[in-house]
Image (cartoon, rainbow, N blue to C red; front, top):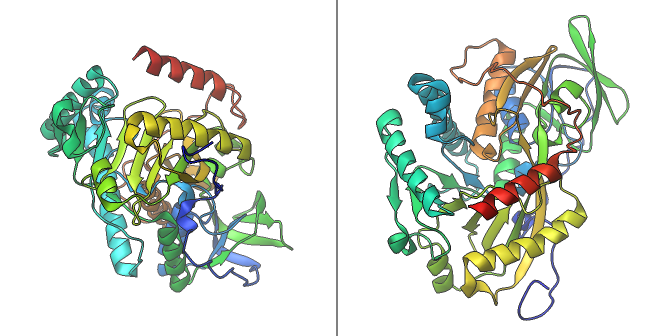
Length: 433
């Protein structure tokens, strides 16, 4: 039961489709030949297609489902600074200069995203709201204080931390032990953004083919032959695989390098304005420091969207339904005053993790790729699509992740058999903390 007021219909689909008109399905015939075939019509593939078409290339985008079907329509719409690894971890692993380059790429990605939205006039509710990182334990808060110091000393970035006694100015909860606040992050409406990006790519001249699955990629001399679930094949000068956590077995070598993990979100009924303001006074994006992370935000109509890795496994309909109860319990744990609030939506999508927790863009066995955003994909996926396009076009790109070593997971062929074990380990770590 998902409400103290009794059972209600639960929509098992992303809230983001609410009151957004269905996009017109693409119906153009598949070409026999294209300069570039892009596999995947999410943020990465569409940003790449736009860039390639603007440079004069003929581009065919193949999407097995519909535009943005995967994580591009199922995420929380959080546009965050930083990477999966924190600033201190980057400095420790790579030294100050390299860490500045890697972290700086996340800031540049947001700048590129903002410029694209403005240039293409994409109405996606983008706002530079900032974000909150909430400390699960006192030790985690001390780590956030150290993060603040590193960001100031090494990255010339000012963020501020608020101890637990004062955190209600930013977060209406006593569950956490203080927060870090970063004003540079933002939020948007994922479905409106991905559809706006598709429209921009189409205006530039790219052809987007929905319900068209790429079934095989074969090298034939200097060209690639891309077979599809529709009649025939497309011969292409270059291929970009932009499928992230939905890569499957199309390119087995890439499937061994990304692990799909389900991330689920619930959306409540709309909250009264004063109630919404008491939960997130600054309407910031928010997430915490647990291994089984919670992340949350308010929608434009004051629903609380509350997400997390409710189950450490791939997304399935049964897992999504279980996640609804798990996340509702988590929401009430963080915000006890919302115990009487109805949950009206639940959905899941897959997030792609890599062995080194970095996103990657480059070329493998002749095929270009961009993927592995580890939960930080809205701005980074857009920027990595641009970087992949520049690689294909032979342009220089300052992106420091280009051709970073992309190692496969050992004993892994694309079926993540080890996820339940990893989930049990992270559960134990959170319990001990």
